[in-house]
Image (tube, rainbow, N blue to C red; front, top):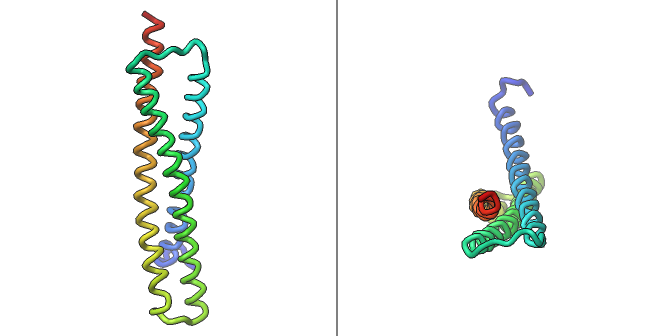
Length: 147
């Protein structure tokens, strides 16, 4: 396959996109779990005594980070289902099955692929909100100690 082959280029970039999406989902999932561990450690620290608005920010942050982790896991499972349907279509094509037989699986993996991207963006959004609220909660506690 020549380097200037447009078809080969698409296949390579599609492979890179799939790998990068997996990396991004797993990275945000890892950060969400790490932030949750940090929150639990902070809450168990006897020196951390949040006031009312900090408790609210901390609680909302906990919910957002849990949602982010849940969405990340759901996204991974959804991607696996999509790969499974895609593999089924590839196998059926190799076996010479008709387009009509393959179409339900194609519809399924297209639907799952769209859902994957929706889940990914929701995961990113909830992680961002969770981290922002976490920073507000921690910053408020630090600022009170400095004053």
